[in-house]
Amino acid sequence: MSNEKNFPTNHNIILSIKLPLNSTIYNDSDPIANTSKQIVLLHDSQDLLNGVIEELCDLYNREIIKGNQIDSILCSIEQHLVNKKQKPEEIINLCLNNPIVQTNSIIQNILAYCYRYGKWIKNDNDQAFVHFQKSAEMGNSIGIFGRY
Image 1 (tube, rainbow, N blue to C red):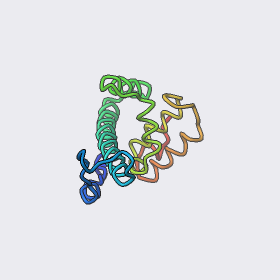
Image 2: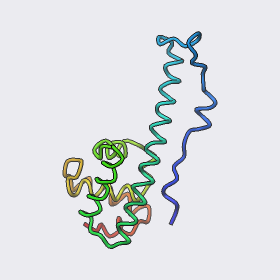
Image 3: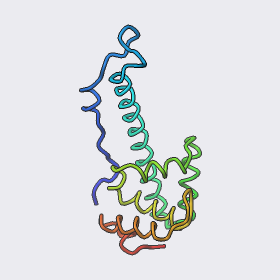
Image 4: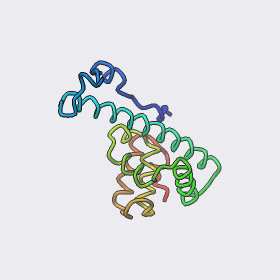
């Protein structure tokens, strides 16, 4: 099984386009400086998402090893995110809209369960199937057997 918790970041890209933002050069109307600020914010949010994804994968695996059912696992995920002052709905939406996360079979399982049970997202069995299928294509046994 591959290490699904390590996601590439764009550290080299950020460093290569870093612009000076001191008060004598930086101007809010400067589109290049604004773009630089946006890229740094995107980088920070990707780092945040990577950390959350790693935590969710670890938590999911621990809960599966304990033999917990998916309703208990989803409650554990919710409690973990709430304790971290993060909104589960926002994290799920970030996962749905992030191409890097699309290559993580564990997150695909979590997304499938969210769709299957209508947790933090509208219940949609077709989308649950799609995410289980993505997980299965990555060799994840839960995705292969579509355990739900």
